[in-house]
Image (cartoon, rainbow over all chains, first blue to last red; front, side, top):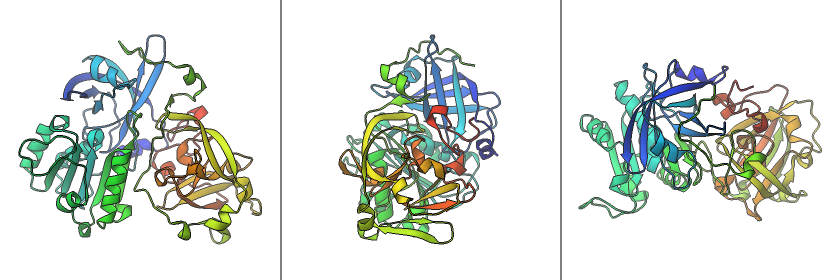
Length: 254
Length: 200
Protein backbone atom coordinates (compact mmCIF):
# COMPACT_ATOMS: atom_id res chain seq x y z
CA UNK A 1 0.00 0.00 0.00
CA UNK A 2 1.40 3.35 -1.01
CA UNK A 3 0.66 5.02 2.31
CA UNK A 4 2.93 2.58 4.09
CA UNK A 5 5.85 4.26 2.35
CA UNK A 6 5.24 7.23 4.62
CA UNK A 7 5.82 5.58 7.92
CA UNK A 8 8.89 4.32 9.67
CA UNK A 9 11.08 4.28 6.62
CA UNK A 10 13.20 7.13 5.44
CA UNK A 11 11.68 8.84 2.43
CA UNK A 12 14.62 8.51 0.07
CA UNK A 13 15.83 10.61 -2.84
CA UNK A 14 15.35 8.91 -6.19
CA UNK A 15 16.36 9.81 -9.71
CA UNK A 16 13.59 10.32 -12.24
CA UNK A 17 14.19 10.58 -15.97
CA UNK A 18 12.07 13.04 -17.94
CA UNK A 19 10.20 11.04 -20.56
CA UNK A 20 7.61 13.55 -21.75
CA UNK A 21 6.77 17.25 -21.55
CA UNK A 22 3.41 18.82 -22.32
CA UNK A 23 2.38 22.44 -22.13
CA UNK A 24 -0.92 22.84 -20.31
CA UNK A 25 -1.10 26.62 -20.68
CA UNK A 26 1.34 29.31 -21.84
CA UNK A 27 2.84 29.27 -18.33
CA UNK A 28 2.37 25.70 -17.08
CA UNK A 29 4.02 22.48 -18.14
CA UNK A 30 3.45 18.85 -17.24
CA UNK A 31 6.61 16.79 -16.74
CA UNK A 32 6.35 13.01 -16.91
CA UNK A 33 9.09 11.19 -15.04
CA UNK A 34 10.11 7.58 -15.16
CA UNK A 35 11.12 6.66 -11.62
CA UNK A 36 12.49 3.14 -11.17
CA UNK A 37 11.28 1.47 -7.96
CA UNK A 38 8.77 4.25 -7.27
CA UNK A 39 6.89 2.98 -4.19
CA UNK A 40 3.52 4.21 -5.45
CA UNK A 41 1.39 7.08 -4.20
CA UNK A 42 -2.11 8.11 -3.24
CA UNK A 43 -3.98 10.81 -5.16
CA UNK A 44 -3.36 14.18 -3.52
CA UNK A 45 0.19 13.51 -2.33
CA UNK A 46 3.19 15.57 -3.39
CA UNK A 47 6.88 15.15 -4.10
CA UNK A 48 9.94 17.23 -3.31
CA UNK A 49 12.00 17.98 -6.42
CA UNK A 50 15.68 18.92 -6.11
CA UNK A 51 17.67 20.70 -8.80
CA UNK A 52 21.42 21.20 -8.45
CA UNK A 53 23.75 23.69 -10.15
CA UNK A 54 27.24 22.64 -11.35
CA UNK A 55 28.85 24.14 -8.23
CA UNK A 56 26.68 22.01 -5.94
CA UNK A 57 24.15 24.71 -5.02
CA UNK A 58 20.73 23.10 -4.91
CA UNK A 59 17.12 24.14 -4.41
CA UNK A 60 14.13 21.99 -3.49
CA UNK A 61 10.45 22.67 -4.06
CA UNK A 62 7.31 20.63 -3.45
CA UNK A 63 4.93 19.83 -6.30
CA UNK A 64 1.63 17.98 -6.26
CA UNK A 65 1.53 14.74 -8.19
CA UNK A 66 -0.91 14.99 -11.11
CA UNK A 67 -0.91 11.35 -12.19
CA UNK A 68 -3.03 8.57 -10.76
CA UNK A 69 -1.36 5.81 -8.78
CA UNK A 70 0.02 3.26 -11.26
CA UNK A 71 2.36 0.36 -11.32
CA UNK A 72 4.63 1.63 -14.07
CA UNK A 73 6.86 3.92 -12.01
CA UNK A 74 5.48 6.98 -13.80
CA UNK A 75 5.05 10.24 -11.92
CA UNK A 76 3.64 13.40 -13.49
CA UNK A 77 3.82 16.87 -12.01
CA UNK A 78 2.42 20.06 -13.48
CA UNK A 79 4.47 23.16 -12.72
CA UNK A 80 3.17 26.72 -13.02
CA UNK A 81 5.88 29.23 -13.90
CA UNK A 82 6.10 32.00 -11.32
CA UNK A 83 7.43 35.36 -12.55
CA UNK A 84 10.22 35.54 -10.00
CA UNK A 85 10.51 31.87 -9.22
CA UNK A 86 13.88 30.23 -8.73
CA UNK A 87 12.94 26.69 -9.72
CA UNK A 88 9.70 26.90 -11.71
CA UNK A 89 11.20 28.81 -14.70
CA UNK A 90 13.85 26.10 -14.96
CA UNK A 91 11.32 23.27 -14.80
CA UNK A 92 8.94 24.88 -17.29
CA UNK A 93 11.48 26.23 -19.80
CA UNK A 94 14.82 24.43 -19.57
CA UNK A 95 14.13 20.81 -18.73
CA UNK A 96 14.14 18.47 -21.74
CA UNK A 97 13.33 14.81 -22.33
CA UNK A 98 16.17 12.64 -21.11
CA UNK A 99 17.15 15.01 -18.29
CA UNK A 100 17.25 13.58 -14.81
CA UNK A 101 15.67 15.15 -11.74
CA UNK A 102 15.97 14.12 -8.14
CA UNK A 103 12.75 13.57 -6.27
CA UNK A 104 11.65 12.43 -2.86
CA UNK A 105 8.25 11.15 -1.91
CA UNK A 106 5.39 10.55 -1.92
CA UNK A 107 4.67 12.94 0.94
CA UNK A 108 1.48 13.84 2.79
CA UNK A 109 -1.23 11.62 4.18
CA UNK A 110 -4.08 14.05 4.78
CA UNK A 111 -5.05 15.76 1.53
CA UNK A 112 -5.65 12.41 -0.20
CA UNK A 113 -8.48 10.53 -1.87
CA UNK A 114 -8.45 6.74 -1.83
CA UNK A 115 -10.36 4.59 -4.30
CA UNK A 116 -12.13 2.85 -1.38
CA UNK A 117 -13.99 6.10 -0.63
CA UNK A 118 -17.55 5.90 -1.96
CA UNK A 119 -19.10 9.13 -0.61
CA UNK A 120 -19.74 12.18 -2.83
CA UNK A 121 -16.66 14.33 -3.34
CA UNK A 122 -16.59 18.08 -3.89
CA UNK A 123 -13.36 19.37 -5.39
CA UNK A 124 -12.70 23.11 -5.43
CA UNK A 125 -9.63 24.38 -7.29
CA UNK A 126 -8.11 27.83 -7.63
CA UNK A 127 -5.65 28.08 -10.54
CA UNK A 128 -2.81 25.56 -10.34
CA UNK A 129 -4.47 24.16 -7.21
CA UNK A 130 -6.25 21.85 -9.64
CA UNK A 131 -3.21 19.56 -9.89
CA UNK A 132 -3.76 17.27 -6.85
CA UNK A 133 -7.50 17.29 -7.61
CA UNK A 134 -6.73 16.03 -11.12
CA UNK A 135 -4.81 13.15 -9.53
CA UNK A 136 -8.02 12.31 -7.63
CA UNK A 137 -10.16 12.48 -10.78
CA UNK A 138 -7.67 10.30 -12.68
CA UNK A 139 -7.49 7.82 -9.78
CA UNK A 140 -11.24 7.58 -9.67
CA UNK A 141 -11.35 6.83 -13.41
CA UNK A 142 -8.48 4.33 -13.20
CA UNK A 143 -10.17 2.50 -10.33
CA UNK A 144 -13.55 2.56 -12.15
CA UNK A 145 -14.97 4.14 -9.03
CA UNK A 146 -18.52 5.42 -9.22
CA UNK A 147 -18.11 7.84 -6.30
CA UNK A 148 -19.96 10.99 -7.43
CA UNK A 149 -17.43 13.78 -8.08
CA UNK A 150 -17.94 17.47 -8.73
CA UNK A 151 -15.13 19.87 -9.54
CA UNK A 152 -15.58 23.61 -9.24
CA UNK A 153 -12.53 25.13 -10.93
CA UNK A 154 -11.77 28.83 -10.67
CA UNK A 155 -9.44 30.26 -13.32
CA UNK A 156 -8.55 33.75 -14.54
CA UNK A 157 -9.46 33.09 -18.15
CA UNK A 158 -10.17 30.21 -20.55
CA UNK A 159 -6.52 29.90 -21.64
CA UNK A 160 -5.51 29.27 -18.03
CA UNK A 161 -7.36 25.95 -17.74
CA UNK A 162 -5.16 22.90 -17.15
CA UNK A 163 -6.13 19.48 -18.64
CA UNK A 164 -9.08 20.91 -20.55
CA UNK A 165 -9.43 18.15 -23.16
CA UNK A 166 -9.05 15.37 -20.62
CA UNK A 167 -11.69 16.96 -18.39
CA UNK A 168 -14.02 17.11 -21.37
CA UNK A 169 -13.44 13.47 -22.31
CA UNK A 170 -13.76 12.17 -18.76
CA UNK A 171 -16.93 14.09 -17.93
CA UNK A 172 -18.59 13.40 -21.33
CA UNK A 173 -18.59 9.68 -20.75
CA UNK A 174 -19.34 9.78 -17.05
CA UNK A 175 -22.58 11.29 -15.68
CA UNK A 176 -21.28 11.17 -12.11
CA UNK A 177 -18.36 13.50 -12.84
CA UNK A 178 -19.37 17.15 -13.27
CA UNK A 179 -16.97 20.00 -13.95
CA UNK A 180 -17.92 23.65 -13.55
CA UNK A 181 -15.58 26.45 -14.54
CA UNK A 182 -15.67 29.81 -12.78
CA UNK A 183 -13.81 32.59 -14.61
CA UNK A 184 -12.52 35.48 -12.54
CA UNK A 185 -11.32 37.89 -15.27
CA UNK A 186 -12.33 36.79 -18.77
CA UNK A 187 -15.08 34.37 -19.77
CA UNK A 188 -15.64 32.55 -23.06
CA UNK A 189 -18.11 34.34 -25.32
CA UNK A 190 -21.78 33.77 -24.43
CA UNK A 191 -20.82 32.48 -20.98
CA UNK A 192 -23.90 32.74 -18.70
CA UNK A 193 -22.08 34.16 -15.68
CA UNK A 194 -20.11 37.41 -15.62
CA UNK A 195 -16.46 37.10 -14.53
CA UNK A 196 -16.09 36.94 -10.77
CA UNK A 197 -14.88 34.97 -7.84
CA UNK A 198 -16.63 31.91 -6.47
CA UNK A 199 -19.54 33.10 -4.32
CA UNK A 200 -22.45 31.68 -2.35
CA UNK A 201 -24.77 31.43 -5.35
CA UNK A 202 -22.20 29.50 -7.35
CA UNK A 203 -21.60 27.14 -4.44
CA UNK A 204 -25.38 26.67 -4.19
CA UNK A 205 -25.75 25.85 -7.87
CA UNK A 206 -22.54 23.95 -8.67
CA UNK A 207 -21.45 22.19 -5.46
CA UNK A 208 -23.05 19.16 -3.83
CA UNK A 209 -25.81 20.07 -1.38
CA UNK A 210 -24.37 19.80 2.11
CA UNK A 211 -27.03 17.27 3.18
CA UNK A 212 -25.24 14.72 0.99
CA UNK A 213 -22.25 15.16 3.34
CA UNK A 214 -19.60 15.36 0.60
CA UNK A 215 -15.94 15.20 1.48
CA UNK A 216 -14.55 18.52 0.23
CA UNK A 217 -11.00 19.06 -1.05
CA UNK A 218 -10.02 22.69 -1.58
CA UNK A 219 -6.67 23.65 -3.11
CA UNK A 220 -5.34 26.99 -4.30
CA UNK A 221 -3.72 30.22 -3.12
CA UNK A 222 -4.40 31.08 0.52
CA UNK A 223 -7.02 33.83 0.00
CA UNK A 224 -8.90 31.54 -2.41
CA UNK A 225 -8.87 28.65 0.06
CA UNK A 226 -9.97 30.91 2.93
CA UNK A 227 -12.89 32.21 0.93
CA UNK A 228 -13.95 28.85 -0.56
CA UNK A 229 -13.84 27.02 2.78
CA UNK A 230 -15.85 29.80 4.46
CA UNK A 231 -18.48 29.48 1.71
CA UNK A 232 -18.60 25.69 2.03
CA UNK A 233 -18.97 25.97 5.82
CA UNK A 234 -21.66 28.63 5.49
CA UNK A 235 -23.64 26.42 3.12
CA UNK A 236 -23.83 23.75 5.82
CA UNK A 237 -20.80 21.54 5.20
CA UNK A 238 -19.29 20.07 8.33
CA UNK A 239 -15.84 21.55 8.97
CA UNK A 240 -14.49 18.05 9.59
CA UNK A 241 -15.36 17.14 5.99
CA UNK A 242 -13.31 19.98 4.46
CA UNK A 243 -9.64 19.33 3.69
CA UNK A 244 -7.37 22.05 2.39
CA UNK A 245 -4.04 22.58 0.71
CA UNK A 246 -2.73 26.12 0.25
CA UNK A 247 0.16 27.85 -1.36
CA UNK A 248 1.49 31.28 -0.47
CA UNK A 249 2.24 34.00 -2.95
CA UNK A 250 5.96 33.27 -2.96
CA UNK A 251 5.90 29.53 -2.36
CA UNK A 252 6.19 27.52 -5.52
CA UNK A 253 3.56 25.30 -4.00
CA UNK A 254 1.88 25.24 -0.59
CA UNK B 1 23.91 11.14 -5.16
CA UNK B 2 23.52 14.73 -6.25
CA UNK B 3 23.14 14.96 -9.97
CA UNK B 4 23.75 18.22 -11.77
CA UNK B 5 20.71 19.75 -13.41
CA UNK B 6 21.78 20.84 -16.88
CA UNK B 7 21.11 24.55 -17.28
CA UNK B 8 20.15 25.28 -13.68
CA UNK B 9 22.10 28.08 -12.04
CA UNK B 10 19.85 29.01 -9.12
CA UNK B 11 19.66 32.19 -7.14
CA UNK B 12 22.05 32.50 -4.24
CA UNK B 13 21.60 35.20 -1.68
CA UNK B 14 23.74 36.10 1.32
CA UNK B 15 20.71 35.58 3.57
CA UNK B 16 20.56 31.93 2.57
CA UNK B 17 23.68 31.33 4.64
CA UNK B 18 21.66 32.08 7.77
CA UNK B 19 18.95 29.59 6.93
CA UNK B 20 18.60 25.95 7.97
CA UNK B 21 19.38 23.43 5.19
CA UNK B 22 16.88 23.26 2.34
CA UNK B 23 15.05 26.48 3.26
CA UNK B 24 14.57 29.62 1.19
CA UNK B 25 13.84 33.12 2.37
CA UNK B 26 10.43 34.72 2.02
CA UNK B 27 9.30 38.15 3.10
CA UNK B 28 5.57 37.51 3.10
CA UNK B 29 3.78 35.13 5.43
CA UNK B 30 2.40 32.05 3.69
CA UNK B 31 -0.33 29.98 5.37
CA UNK B 32 -0.44 26.23 5.76
CA UNK B 33 -3.42 24.56 7.42
CA UNK B 34 -5.11 21.20 7.00
CA UNK B 35 -8.66 22.50 7.10
CA UNK B 36 -10.90 25.54 7.37
CA UNK B 37 -9.79 28.44 9.56
CA UNK B 38 -11.66 28.38 12.90
CA UNK B 39 -13.10 31.72 14.01
CA UNK B 40 -13.10 31.68 17.81
CA UNK B 41 -14.95 34.51 19.58
CA UNK B 42 -12.96 35.89 22.52
CA UNK B 43 -15.86 35.50 24.95
CA UNK B 44 -15.86 31.75 24.27
CA UNK B 45 -12.08 31.31 24.10
CA UNK B 46 -10.34 29.37 26.81
CA UNK B 47 -6.97 27.79 27.38
CA UNK B 48 -6.45 24.79 29.66
CA UNK B 49 -3.59 22.69 30.94
CA UNK B 50 -4.60 19.10 31.69
CA UNK B 51 -2.88 15.86 32.61
CA UNK B 52 -4.94 13.72 30.24
CA UNK B 53 -7.72 13.13 32.75
CA UNK B 54 -8.30 16.35 34.64
CA UNK B 55 -7.89 20.05 34.02
CA UNK B 56 -5.05 21.47 36.11
CA UNK B 57 -5.50 25.11 35.18
CA UNK B 58 -7.86 27.15 33.05
CA UNK B 59 -7.78 30.68 31.66
CA UNK B 60 -10.43 32.68 29.86
CA UNK B 61 -9.33 35.48 27.53
CA UNK B 62 -9.28 38.10 30.26
CA UNK B 63 -7.31 36.06 32.80
CA UNK B 64 -4.92 34.95 30.04
CA UNK B 65 -4.33 38.53 28.93
CA UNK B 66 -3.75 39.55 32.54
CA UNK B 67 -0.64 37.34 32.55
CA UNK B 68 2.64 39.16 31.92
CA UNK B 69 3.51 39.14 28.22
CA UNK B 70 6.74 39.57 26.28
CA UNK B 71 7.69 41.00 22.92
CA UNK B 72 9.94 38.61 21.05
CA UNK B 73 11.71 38.59 17.70
CA UNK B 74 12.23 35.16 16.19
CA UNK B 75 12.93 33.36 12.92
CA UNK B 76 10.28 31.01 11.48
CA UNK B 77 11.01 27.88 9.47
CA UNK B 78 8.18 26.02 7.72
CA UNK B 79 8.61 22.42 6.59
CA UNK B 80 7.30 23.50 3.18
CA UNK B 81 10.71 25.22 2.89
CA UNK B 82 10.09 28.90 3.42
CA UNK B 83 11.80 30.76 6.24
CA UNK B 84 10.96 34.21 7.49
CA UNK B 85 13.50 36.02 9.60
CA UNK B 86 13.11 38.55 12.39
CA UNK B 87 9.37 38.26 12.97
CA UNK B 88 7.96 40.20 15.92
CA UNK B 89 5.37 38.70 18.27
CA UNK B 90 3.77 39.40 21.59
CA UNK B 91 2.83 36.47 23.80
CA UNK B 92 2.88 34.84 27.19
CA UNK B 93 5.87 32.62 27.88
CA UNK B 94 5.11 28.95 28.56
CA UNK B 95 7.39 29.38 31.58
CA UNK B 96 4.71 31.70 32.97
CA UNK B 97 1.86 29.39 31.95
CA UNK B 98 3.51 26.34 33.51
CA UNK B 99 4.82 28.14 36.63
CA UNK B 100 2.29 26.69 39.08
CA UNK B 101 1.97 23.27 37.45
CA UNK B 102 3.46 20.31 39.29
CA UNK B 103 4.01 17.41 36.91
CA UNK B 104 6.22 14.40 36.25
CA UNK B 105 5.17 14.38 32.58
CA UNK B 106 7.91 14.42 29.94
CA UNK B 107 5.74 15.13 26.90
CA UNK B 108 3.13 17.61 25.83
CA UNK B 109 0.33 17.52 23.27
CA UNK B 110 -0.88 20.91 22.11
CA UNK B 111 -4.60 20.94 21.24
CA UNK B 112 -6.31 23.44 18.97
CA UNK B 113 -9.74 24.68 18.02
CA UNK B 114 -10.51 22.70 14.86
CA UNK B 115 -9.05 19.56 16.52
CA UNK B 116 -5.46 19.97 15.33
CA UNK B 117 -2.85 18.48 17.65
CA UNK B 118 0.96 18.44 17.77
CA UNK B 119 3.32 16.74 20.21
CA UNK B 120 6.63 17.83 21.66
CA UNK B 121 8.84 17.12 24.65
CA UNK B 122 7.75 19.24 27.62
CA UNK B 123 11.29 20.57 27.95
CA UNK B 124 10.93 22.20 24.54
CA UNK B 125 8.15 24.36 25.97
CA UNK B 126 10.32 25.56 28.85
CA UNK B 127 13.32 27.85 29.30
CA UNK B 128 12.25 30.77 27.10
CA UNK B 129 11.66 28.58 24.07
CA UNK B 130 7.87 28.78 23.67
CA UNK B 131 5.02 31.27 23.94
CA UNK B 132 1.26 31.55 23.52
CA UNK B 133 1.32 34.42 21.03
CA UNK B 134 -1.59 36.77 20.39
CA UNK B 135 0.00 39.62 18.45
CA UNK B 136 2.07 39.59 15.27
CA UNK B 137 3.87 42.70 14.02
CA UNK B 138 2.07 44.83 16.60
CA UNK B 139 -1.42 43.74 15.49
CA UNK B 140 -3.88 41.23 16.88
CA UNK B 141 -3.11 37.86 15.36
CA UNK B 142 -5.27 37.23 12.28
CA UNK B 143 -7.40 34.04 12.24
CA UNK B 144 -5.56 32.54 9.25
CA UNK B 145 -2.28 32.85 11.16
CA UNK B 146 -3.74 31.24 14.27
CA UNK B 147 -5.59 34.04 16.05
CA UNK B 148 -6.80 34.75 18.62
CA UNK B 149 -3.76 32.90 19.99
CA UNK B 150 -1.28 30.32 18.80
CA UNK B 151 1.58 28.36 20.22
CA UNK B 152 4.95 29.71 19.08
CA UNK B 153 7.93 27.31 19.29
CA UNK B 154 10.33 28.87 16.82
CA UNK B 155 13.22 26.42 17.28
CA UNK B 156 11.11 23.67 15.66
CA UNK B 157 9.41 23.58 12.24
CA UNK B 158 6.35 25.78 12.27
CA UNK B 159 3.76 22.98 12.30
CA UNK B 160 4.73 22.54 15.97
CA UNK B 161 3.54 26.12 16.63
CA UNK B 162 -0.11 25.06 16.78
CA UNK B 163 -2.52 27.72 15.52
CA UNK B 164 -5.78 28.39 17.40
CA UNK B 165 -4.33 26.67 20.45
CA UNK B 166 -6.84 25.87 23.19
CA UNK B 167 -4.76 23.81 25.58
CA UNK B 168 -1.86 21.58 26.38
CA UNK B 169 -2.10 18.02 27.70
CA UNK B 170 0.83 16.84 29.81
CA UNK B 171 1.65 13.19 29.16
CA UNK B 172 3.98 10.60 30.68
CA UNK B 173 4.48 9.08 27.22
CA UNK B 174 4.89 10.59 23.78
CA UNK B 175 1.95 10.43 21.39
CA UNK B 176 2.04 11.62 17.77
CA UNK B 177 -0.06 14.64 16.87
CA UNK B 178 -1.83 15.34 13.57
CA UNK B 179 1.04 15.73 11.09
CA UNK B 180 3.33 13.49 13.14
CA UNK B 181 0.83 10.67 12.49
CA UNK B 182 0.72 11.49 8.76
CA UNK B 183 4.32 11.03 7.77
CA UNK B 184 6.02 14.11 9.24
CA UNK B 185 8.91 13.93 11.71
CA UNK B 186 8.15 13.41 15.38
CA UNK B 187 10.48 16.18 16.61
CA UNK B 188 11.03 18.52 13.64
CA UNK B 189 14.34 20.33 14.18
CA UNK B 190 14.93 22.52 11.10
CA UNK B 191 18.71 22.67 11.65
CA UNK B 192 18.87 18.88 11.44
CA UNK B 193 16.33 18.94 8.58
CA UNK B 194 13.94 16.57 10.35
CA UNK B 195 11.09 16.96 7.88
CA UNK B 196 9.60 13.54 7.38
CA UNK B 197 9.14 10.38 9.40
CA UNK B 198 12.39 8.43 9.20
CA UNK B 199 14.66 11.48 8.71
CA UNK B 200 17.60 11.19 11.11
